[in-house]
Amino acid sequence: MAMIEAKNLWKEYGSNVVLEQVNIKVEEGEFITIVGTSGCGKTTFLRMLLGIEQPTRGELLLDGKKFPDEPGEDRGIVFQKYSVFPHLTVLKNTMLAAEFEHAPLLGKLFGSKRKQAESDAREILHSVGLDNAIDRYPHELSGGMQQRLAIAQALMKKPRILLLDEPFGALDPGIRADMHELIQSLWKKTGLTIFMITHDLAEGFYLGTRLWVFDKIRLDAQQVNAYGACVTYDIPVGKTDVKTFDNIDNSLDKTRKVLLD
Amino acid sequence: MKRLINRYPDRTLGAILGALPFILILIVYIMASNARLEENPRDKLLPSITSMTMAVDKLAMQPSKRSGEYLFWADTGSSLTRLGIGIGIAAIIGLVFGIINGAIPYARANLSPFITAISLVPPLAILPVLFIVFGLGELSKVVLIAIGITPFIIRDMQSNVMELPAEQMIKAQTLGASTWLVIIRVILPQVLPRLIGALRLSLGAAWLFLIAAEAIASTDGLGYRIFLVRRYLAMDIILPYVIWITFLSFFTDYLLKTLSERLFPWFHAADK
Image (cartoon, rainbow over all chains, first blue to last red):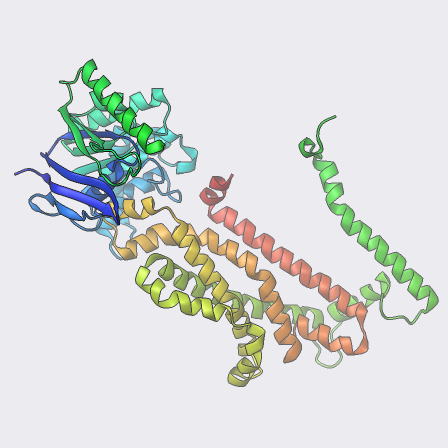
């Protein structure tokens, strides 16, 4: 049985159709990158995986059961920004998951449990390369370091699924390459199932195992929201070539132009 | 020549420019006072600096003949106590209800319209009710201050909570936080510096309610004294008291600001 399955999934807001006829299956351990023009439902789909939006038609299943209708600890998230807590240092941001789990009343750990959480957090911070920033506050970190922290924070909870919503969109190209390396190696180490939304088609072509393109097949220039988007390309990474890249790029361009007009 | 909007005074000049209005008003006052006193040495409207100093000296440095108290300090003590308790109560109620309202949609639906309505009741209009219900003692004065500023603090805290990025709430939930844990670990610490900000903004209103209550029913306090000596046109007491109240207000504000910067460096650094 597939871990995640969408069966003829639709999402509409009134007469605006965002997604239509989405049919997909995802196995445990896949790393899926999602590209698409803004307004083509990538983020809506991610929000459904988070549990903060529900499909209006069809089904979204997790292990064959209906998807939970609120965020939970099995699904970690890294947003483009605001994913870390500004009032906590790097170490405390990372320890938070442990404190939530073991101190449901006070939300703070003491004594040996605290030491354990601290050493777990240090280990994870080491794996994302933040050893030297342990006692800094998020505002003292660069954008790339903040995203590393957001990833460390999510990993601390050991989720089954990690959702990344344009996590590197605001970063410089050089730093972005470092982050790709980091996320690839973390994925290999942990065997997580990862969904990553990106603006950058090239990113989707070499990261992960599978590339999805969200696009509108039917486009009405007078009424762009009459038809929704679906997964138009679902290709294994590695079997992609320049021609596919150009095809996708062209079709995304076409949609973008119609949506913007 | 640079445009005016691009020119900045250096530190010294800035300080001088800042002090200038104070010095000017002092000079104008002294001149006007001298002119009036020359015409009529018994004039009470614009007392000289000397007579004000003497009046303050009498109230602050010599025990009152009737009660043995140093009236100036006794007045300051009782006023600040009332103010402190009133603001303290408002802060606690405002924080609790602001967070509950901001964080829990059901609570917001239930309480928000009511609090908005309450905040529109003019506190001074219900002062007689407070006197009737709570008597003329300390309680009614403290309650007036609390009633006067609590609705503002609740509403301000509520909007502060709601302005925290939704991403943070979602993130906390994915890390396993319950509603309670989101409130005490994510929301509370982030709205505390904003609570201090709200208190600073409500200081002016708090003083207003304090002085009004003291003027109407009290036997001590800065507001009481001003309204008492008004009967004798004792401007030599009223003016120093007004300056003292202004100073206290300024100093409290400064203290709160410093406290906030000490306790919440991350908040003020993120501001810049």
